[in-house]
Image 1 (cartoon, rainbow over the protein chains, first blue to last red):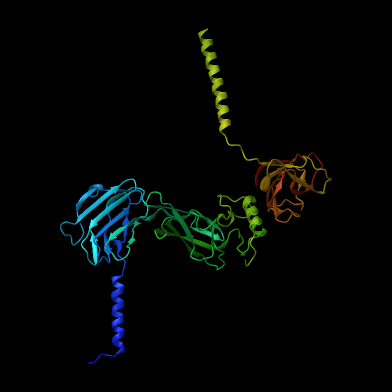
Image 2: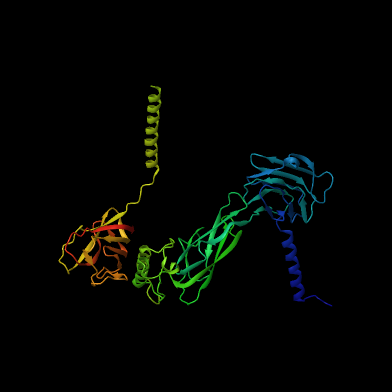
Length: 320
Length: 152
């Protein structure tokens, strides 16, 4: 088949050249593999190996790894010359690793065997403290033999921790009047010392409100007005999350029954007015029976003229 | 001699202990919240037999009053219910300000039990409520408020 003069063949040749040029000009990249490490408090861990990608032509590396504060480096394997630990090791290659406590840097110098990818088998063993935070091992340095300047990718340290409730979400009354308030409480802690916990309460859109706000640890919840004629169950959920990492969280809930009865509606006519207050006074004076469920509106365990005052101060018009 | 000495030492010790304990107790107690006192505006009300009179109950001392319960006592046979017959159920006090309710009930011929509630506080020096009564006998009234419980 004669391909001379075929434009498609020419385009294919150009594309091939472009790919070749692209590959050959790629910058070497020095990265930890993998690029992230999950750490936990009070533990001994080891970094993954460094990998030199696009390493064609490279004959040596000279890099500095900066160790974040709070980590104690095991210097057993750093501090002197040793045989090169790169893959594809060949006799005569030299490896040098040195720990500088002042700068918290480990310097790694190594002659390498050229290849597409070089794995430097030096890893860093370190110990985390009781208080530990996320951070990263940063890398800088130089390489020889590369056609362009290298790029460096740090090792990200991701903190493994959990948030759990030490006191599950609860309310100080399981049943409230329509529109009445209860006190909510919960307590949670993070497994990492020093990490504080943020709280977020919700009634699932039932129309109640939290005071002073829904992000208070122990807010007061005001139930919605329930005019349905039947009691309504409201689930109050609380999410406790680490302030340093909001995805680390725990969720708990408690159930509250909102009565269809208005607080202070002694006569059950769906309003709260002076008639209700007057019924309380009649009960106080002994004309009618005391009904603790409807008359003890201030919740002090007895029916007095103070309950009548509460009703007069909290009127609710019919239909509101 | 020895007996007197021992006795005197004991007495001094007792006095020191007594005064010391009393002072300590006073210092450690929490100051009580000022509480208003309810009193009839005057111990006597002037009125002719058969007339309706009102007994103003005033707020004195310190604090204010939002609700109260108290017994108004007087000399036996001086007053009778306004309606002219002994009430068995409580009656409302008419003419009270908006947001104020009051009921009273005869416990016996010389005692009215009063319960009062308001949406606002009545301050010291003001009249809480006027209790309506009918003069039955023109004599010393001896009006007194007893068993008062007030709430702010």
